[in-house]
Image (cartoon, rainbow, N blue to C red; front, top):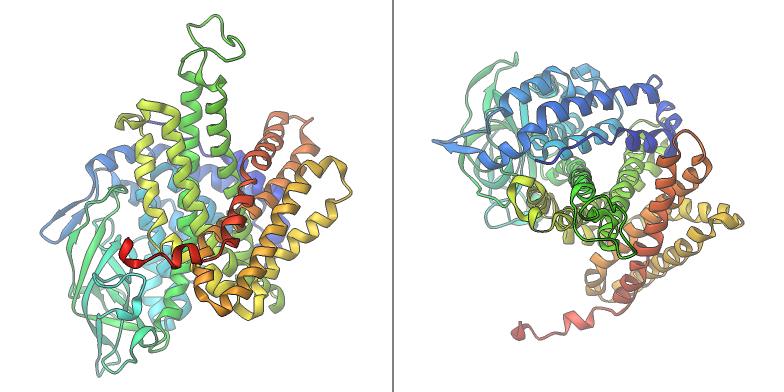
Length: 594
């Protein structure tokens, strides 16, 4: 079983040095969130996850969830670990104090989500879905419903789940058939079936609060006729006590490639009583609050899996003796050199490191702006931050899960044949990581969201929140000769991104297929430039501190940045050529020839 140690030093580097903690502390209510407090909380979170959740990762994968007569039982140890997790207050970090939360920044919650995903991906899904459900309820429910449901969800007594997909419709939610019949008391009775519902049924809590997309009898066709409803598994009285079962049942659980300890359910609603959230026929607006929260969380899952796989691969590369270095024995006292000396192994490890630490910086940047979008007192600054988060959400979800899977795959490759063996744990990372590219909107859908919605929104307003700071930083460093090793490649890649953006905007107006054909390559191009910008900044910080007490840490930042700029950022050239080739090569292919 691979080990995992919380990357506390790097998490604190992102918070303390790359992103400036004073930006968070300047927000109303966060004045006392000092870097020391953040470090202390993350250290305790790491300790809990390493000691109580990591040991359950492999056993939970091997045992999986069990479905018996409509009930789902999580693997041995999960129920006790969840109780300990909630009793320690980890479910309360970001929640509002009026509902029992600690009111801490989202930045901190996203760091916790990374640690959870590294230690036990499946376990993290249960509190993660609940947190997203709380966000939607907090944003769209009446105060009476908030008081009835949020305190127990925040405390971890009840969990949450998101019910969108139906057997005949996934992405195209306008086709959904679940019905909501209005009642005289203002409530609704929901009937229908949902599938692929993560944490839809389990034994961790006494109640599960489902957020369900459905349509009323007289609703308009398509996406415009969808409403969002809160449907508890067990009915809840006005005083918050549990009453009786609510017509919500689990029909089966899926047998999956990975995340075996997470219950993925078919949930049936049989005249289940529910409450409208938000306005009638505007359910997608409300559900997107939860979906966007989950998409960021899923991106973090890719990061977490990548970190765990990297740590396992490094440990193995130090210990595994095979062959001799091409330039002569490095450890002549041993029968062979550790595989760490071989160029290809170093290439793999540095690729894993460059993506993982770059993604951690990107997630931190987005998390900081998310906090500003929620708390900043200036409306313009608040809107700018919200625009940035909207722009980067599909990039975080798609790129960080794509690279999370790549990194997990590379980690297994470092082990060679031993990586393919279950007992070493690396193949589980590959299986678990794969789902993150699919759920909460496949990564192809994320790319379409980026080019089809985010780029043209408000005549390109969102783009300015990324393009302007990158351009300003390049201009700031253009006379710094010591940074030209980074500046020139980043400037070229940034130029490609700008040119591709303008080309897509022009061509897709005449032919929408142009945007669709280029979407995935464009998203990756955008992400690689974003990581390039962040790696240049991290190298700049590292250069100024590599002669101090932590010389090894800061020199590693400089060296990893060099690898990124020499070996990964050049991908932007090929992506640019692919984008500019246009849609004809794929769209004019004869359908009958497939």
